[in-house]
Length: 401
Image (tube, one colour):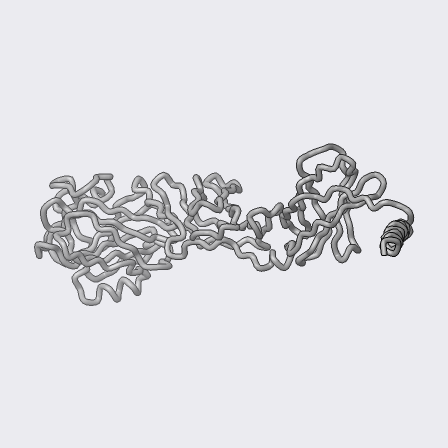
């Protein structure tokens, strides 16, 4: 039994030794009598999309033998080589000439002998292009209050809150000197100020976006949009105002209370005699004056009463560009006066009704789209005291530009 056992152990050891040798020989034959060597793989990969391109960035391998990296995509049909010229913590490359698509990239490292690493794959890398660009819209303005005209003459443009991918909006406009100018609205801001603006000129704007916060490219909206028309109310120059007397116009109480008191620049209600004071012959009555130039968009008027009494509670504002043959033959208290005034070419710009004592300033809008106006007639219909006398301190007009 001992001899049999000894013989069995020997046969087993012989089989193990010669069996292992045969396996190693087969493995070397499979590899072409060479050892399989892998270079160090790249670390974490990040992607930053762009306009028909993408930037890939990865943590460098610690393997000092690496001489290049190769990025593959499109099932390895396309590739880009990134040579290693110096040792850095990270490597980045931009791959251009792509389509607007979602890509998968694989990255291999290589040494000088052609040994390669295992693949590092990065999936769902989106590339943007003209399709994305065509969906972009210029940033929306505040439709309720698109702009504010500031006291210093500057204009504040108001925009609604932007998307987080909005980078900026460029504003093109004409300044007060007539020169082309630009302003920039950042994505985090809601307003932009035009320090100087030429009234009535166009304001155009165009927005810029990133498809993602980390994008390497900025996309521009394909067209400019026009901002809502910006109007300024420019006070008419009172230094040009002159008295005019037409037939049946009201007389003044005395020479010191003439119509010219209505544009002497006084501020707030004035007392006698620093006022216009009519005679008390009849009511209604009318007074006329020349603003000195034609205004094509007369838009607002302010009237200030006397500090005590006889202030107009109801009056009409009439306008015309030329008073040639425009005089009315009827007195202002005649029932046919209004029809005759219209027939003579006058336009009723506004009827003002005051429910207070008529002392403080009241500012009113005139009719929209008025005809050109140079001459003004004020037809006083009633006063707060019921008197035929009418008193006023100041009249001011604004033209919309």
